[in-house]
Length: 122
Image 1: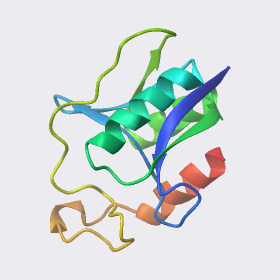
Image 2 (image 1 turned 90 degrees about the vertical axis):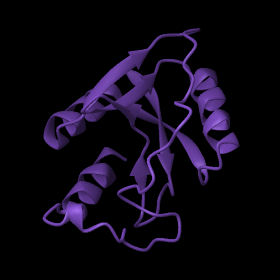
Image 3 (image 1 turned 135 degrees about the vertical axis):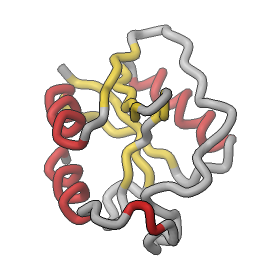
């Protein structure tokens, strides 16, 4: 099944997939309708997040990525109202300027491996 996800810095070395933190989990939303994903991306852009892009992908590829990366995914059905959280994380695993984050708590994470997995989804 084809779904739509939100990417930041699409098709760059600094590409990232949008996720929402819920308690101690990271959730990736898979929209069944492109219009719903585009609406959500516009809300993210209104929160000053850089260049959210809607990309069509195979749902199984996203599910596999989530399983490999200790993320979860949820299916957002047509017409479901989903609103981004009011607060965004202070520091992401990536930055809009392409530089690595300054936070040292992420040491040991193989970002190149994660990027290769994301590239494999495309």
